[in-house]
Length: 115
Image 1 (cartoon, rainbow, N blue to C red):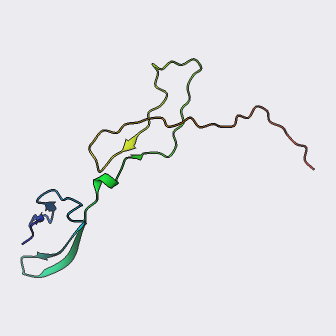
Image 2: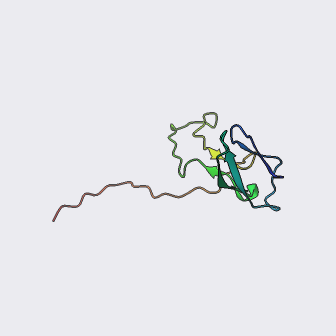
Image 3: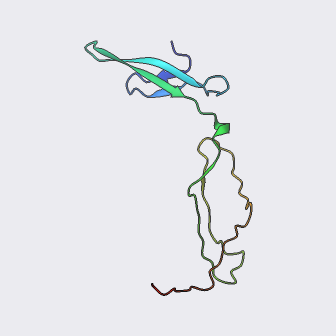
């Protein structure tokens, strides 16, 4: 009856029969029915949305990372590790530093007298 999914009749677990390709199908919609031992039944709508894994790139786990290093530290001591989630793709993630951000350094604090 359903060529893309199977439903375990005892647990209700829905499984795909085959891998889905987003280029071919973006959504599957079904009416599912559950029947008890007294032949009473109920139905529900089941929608499975297919996500294009190529459009779902990696995401950093934080928006900002801060590290503190001792003066004269060498490259043998890691400063920090940044983490990425790549839920929809099983390929390796490569990291590269794009540019050094310039921050203004405060050398002196001036306290103004109150009026």
